[in-house]
Amino acid sequence: MVTLDPAAIADFFARVPGRLGAPWLGQTLGFYRDYLGLVRRQHAAFGPVFKHRVIGLDSVALLGPAANRFLLADGAASLSSRLGWDWSLGRLFPRGLMLRDGDDHRHHRRILQVAFSRDALAGYLEPMQPRVAGLAREWPAGRVAAHPRLKTFLLDLAARVFCGLTLREEIAALNAHFAAVVRASTALLRRSVPGFAYARGLDSRGELARFFAELVAARRGAPGEDLLGRLCAAVSEEGDTLADDEVVDHMVFFLMAAHDTTTSTLSSLLRELALAPAWQERLRQESRAFATGGAISLERLRELTLLGQAIKETLRLHPPLVLIPRRTTAEVEFDGWRIPAGVNVGISTAFTHRMPELWTDPETFDPDRFSDARAEDRRLPFTWIPFGGGAHLCLGMFFAEIQVKLVAHHLLSSLRWRAIRGWTAPIRQVPIQFPTDDLPLDFERL
Image 1 (tube, helix red, strand yellow):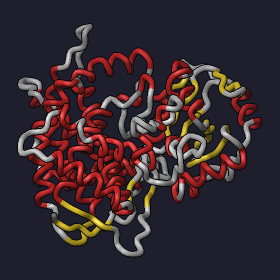
Image 2 (tube, helix red, strand yellow; image 1 turned 180 degrees about the vertical axis):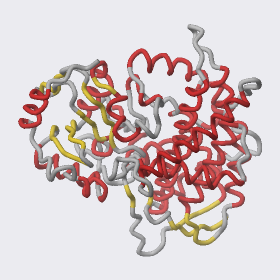
Image 3 (cartoon, one colour; image 1 turned 30 degrees about the horizontal axis):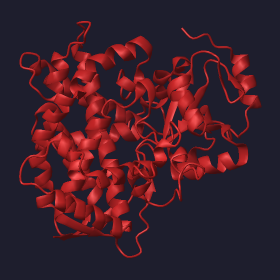
Image 4 (cartoon, one colour; image 1 turned 90 degrees about the vertical axis):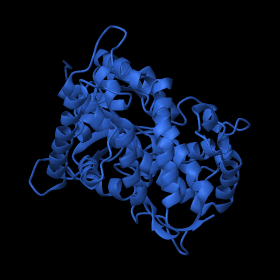
């Protein structure tokens, strides 16, 4: 139980620079329209620590690598991930790994680690390969809305790899349910009023939970080697297992992350390569030289070093999650500020990733910054954090890398794409970065 001192919290907010703005609304419109621009303006006006208000939630931004290290590692024991994410995800992804703290988080992470071991990743890679090759083979020439095509494919792929399912008729419904849940995470009206986004998200969450509950019940007797099977059979070193409802909670979150955040990254990569054709050609030459008629192992996939750098650069410019929230559970100190318990704080992935003090020409797509010769991400700890860090470092980080690299490799080997003349490449940054125009690109088969 966290003991709160309302007077101490009020005094702290009175002293912190920044503007909360109008009651409830605050900076909400700027948050939706241009999150990074809003943070940059506030940083220019108030410095690296400032208060703001979004959709009725008052919080304090802590900016820069030192803040990232404080929130993700040094001060993590007194900063709750569960309470930080509860406002946006609590009812939509209850009891997911991001919404657990301390011993409870460690307990679940140890069990779930079984499903993301090296052997498990190699097992997921094998059935993915013919499906991804088929995506590239069947991709049409001409103008294509790439984002929805990738999203549908990646949900189908995740369902096959994670659950052993061929969805067919169910794919459209599941895609719609996941989209509704993600939209609800930043809904303006945070109440379950029928017809509004938050209520639709809660309804969709219920449908997803029912869908996976039936799968879990069927799998208990015959687990299998996919993610669902591994979670049903997972046993930690201490002999702990997951209850049915815990497997359901984790599967809903994992399947969302496996297709939504990966779709965001792949869409952003295609976007950047359309705008940087010279880099697209360099990556294509690497992929075509790498081309093999047989299966690709985890070790061989690592040989696509330029593509790996391009993916890291894409995640720098366009991290799927642009911010990471926490709530203090005890008084903490950062940069001379004593922050009482019960204060919402957050770091900005998107801001750090474009700080000119940390990156050479930070607005430019330049994968060479991640080469061994330059290694700009290793100059200072907690500079590149698209997967978070510390105890809550994304458990699916390596799976995401494998999935993005495999799809990008096959697309580069088979296709060339160009930006449409006059295209502005619009992006919405919250709740997950995505192109607002569905990413229309002109594709040519090779």
